[in-house]
Image (cartoon, rainbow, N blue to C red; front, side, top):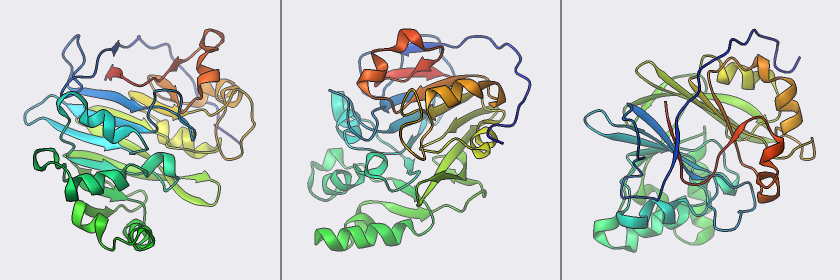
Length: 275
């Protein structure tokens, strides 16, 4: 059964701040310990002026820490804008290009870009990920480009790991024949869940369970694309998602134009959400 039924109590609203990108993507508004900033929210084809998948989780506790979830095309340019953001760690859900493609220009930046803009960081990849990057680099004719640019790690499904001080747990999700994962990111008592890409499945409900915020992809209004979630299925099983708040992402501009018809909050580039 998809999304086994679960009771759904009413919950309070949450603060969303849209603002001009600043040097550290700090939102104007009430101070909170943990913040999610949407760097890029486009689907497999970019919306005009938008970056593809990239979500920055930050804590304002000292020392300041941040973790980037996915790094699709356009994300690096946004991070470099207006003074740049030093990313300590990133975690990649799967190897479809719209979720990892900016690791390529990031590696070039660290190798040949301005020294003051080099952004070395640790990168957590699905099982076998470093070998996949090595194969990509060999095809590009630049052996070792990723090893020299990043500190590469593999995560193990269901086994928590520490990235930039956050506790992260990767959960396997069905997405074509690709090995794909969603993440549960914990900081103190705050819990963020992020789906990456997934077909509608009970595993999504397990991923979202107990989260203060669930960032979930929904590719289309009706079921058109296999191994992705759609709005109709999400609406039918919303009560099964035992999470406090839900933001839907990875939508095309024609979907965003119809937001008035939809009951959920949609992600957009530059959105900041305080947990």
